Length: 337
Image (tube, rainbow, N blue to C red):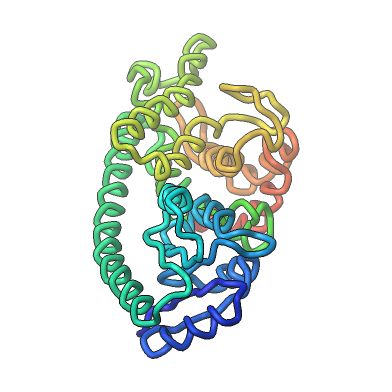
């Protein structure tokens, strides 16, 4: 199957010359503006983008900034095709993440050969990226298993909450609930990283973590530190691996899943949409699973009781928009449980 190239330029001449040169080898989409490019990106992802810099409205540099800030688009290789060939322009472009510059007016054979060369290299990069993904996912699995093994009272909690998160995010997208933010996420990474939301429990004493009875107020204060401890652990991993992007979702799940919509949660007492979306979504998944699970200090609530409790807390503990999505998909939660 031929690779797909987006050619983005406000010049009709550049678009027609580029399309004529590339079309024998690739599927080429010619787009007269960055705005048109982003509209098409919502429907399909190219293997490479050829991007002009000087365009009316949104410049190539601004388009590049938005591409690299978006989880789903950041990996797409970008070559600037421009009449600006000064050192400052090239330095800025490479700093933003461009893989090459091609000057205008371009030679069609040079354009084709440079695109072919970069796509060949990109295939090797993709293979390496897939290997790194498996490694990162493996590390998350090991850490999540360590937490699960230490907290004997919550068997299966981590995997169930990951399933609940997937249900909520899929339906939030379908129902356009905070979809503007979610569309910028790599959902596979987000769902995987949600499994680290309780990683801070590694630093909680076994005596407290597995106490066969209700915690004292002092013990509960210690348990509450697992949210900020989780953030610190994830920060340490990010510093040592240099991969903050992969772990930024995990940090928000860990640090904010005990915040409450009304500002009475912990550790920061944030309220409303001040709470990162990851924390607001995990709050429902985490509480639902706790309610329907047996604990040393309580019997499990029924699914119906748990749903009723969560809906009564909509607008107090939970984001009301996400609570409504939960209610509509409550049968899926029951099936996971």
